Structure formats: structure tokens, C-alpha cells
Image (cartoon, rainbow, N blue to C red; front, top):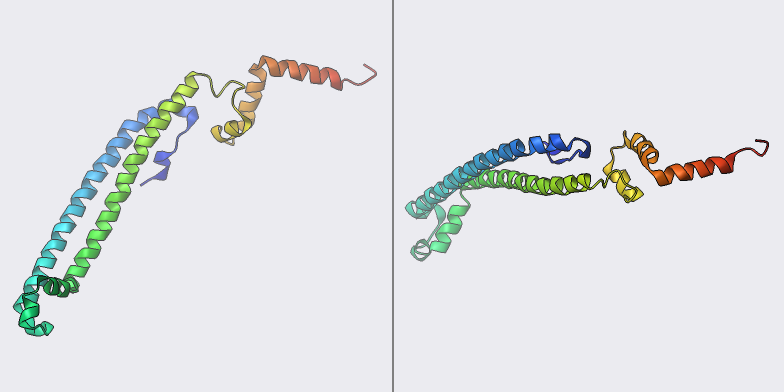
Amino acid sequence: MIYDDFKINIYNLHREWEQQPSLSFKYGEDLAFKKAERDRKKGAMDLALADAIDHVLSNPDEYDMTKAQANSSTFVKNKALSDEAYQTAYEEWVKAEREANKVQAACWSLVDKKMALESITKLFLADYYTTDTVTPDARIEAIDRKDFKEQQLKALRESKRMRRRVKNDIKDEKPEGS
């Protein structure tokens, strides 16, 4: 899993939208394989448990069981659960389940990313990132650190209100002899 697949570059929305379907397919396909692997491990675990139960029932003397205990399915199952082959199969199934859950979370993250891309695109089309309505905190979060100064200067140059302020500040700062 590549965590960069879930980040959004607001300056390349077209690239983000181009990548979104292939990322969804990539992680969806991976999820299908992980689920199949998990199900295969579950089958192996169930088979190991059945073999362990059969072994316990076939060898009651090995487990110091009385006839009453041998007739108790709970007692037999508890003895079988401690079988080494079953424990190994169980651990393998837990690992496969964890992997499937991680890929499932990645698929959900891609759905969240798509919704975020839709919202960011709407904001972009509404000139959210180029108007003075953006708070300084939001601007800092939205703009990459490298491009911040350049974007800030561009916004200042394009903003009529800011140009007036800069002109007034320049008038105020002129030396007295001018």
C-alpha cells in the first residue's frame, strides 16, 4: 500500500481525477485477492480444527478423558483448540484477515478521496483558491509550502483591494523630503 495514493495535490486536480479510477481498480482487485486468501486460510483453519477434534475423539487416553468427557462436545472442542496445527492455521487466518481489512480500509479511503476531489473541484471552480475569502490558515493548509510565497504574490497582484492598500502604504512611507 502506497500512502501517497491517498494524498491530493490541489494544483494537479486533472491528474488526481485521471488516477482515481485506476487506483480504485488496483485496490479493489487487491481486496478481492486478499479476501480469497483469507477465505482459503479460514477453510484450512476449519479443516485443522476438524482433524484435531477427530484426533481427540480417536485417542481419548492421550488426553486423559473419561467417557463422560468424550461425550461432551465442549470438552472435546476445547482440547482440539489447543492443537498445534490448529493454532498455526488460526494465526495464518488472523494475518490474512488483517491484510484484507487493511485493503478494505484503503478502498474506503479512495471513496473518501473521491468525495474530497469533488468538493475541492467545486471550490476550485468557484475561485475559492484565488479570492480573498480564504482565511490565512486555510490558505497555508491548501497551498504547498514551496509555492506559498509565489501564490501569495500572485494573489496580491490580482487583488484590486490589495493593490490599493499597497499604493496607500507606499504613499505613507515616502520620505519627508520628496
